[in-house]
Length: 83
Image (cartoon, rainbow, N blue to C red; front, side, top):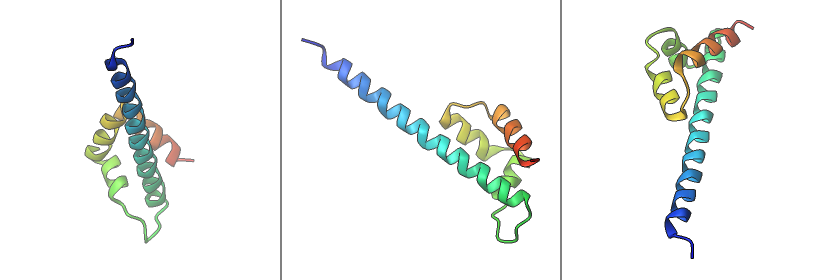
């Protein structure tokens, strides 16, 4: 008979993967907000752009939760907004 812990471990790993997916989705929303604000639309929420160009407090938190490097993500975002 298999220990019950194996089932719990698998469930925890599944939950962790779903949580990481959620935080990655939040990062994509952040990037979308940055792109819209960078284009200069009047209705754009500039919070993400201001954060990216400033201390990156929000980005660092999102990256921590998504297990991503904030410097790498910021560099990719800055590159992608130039296109």
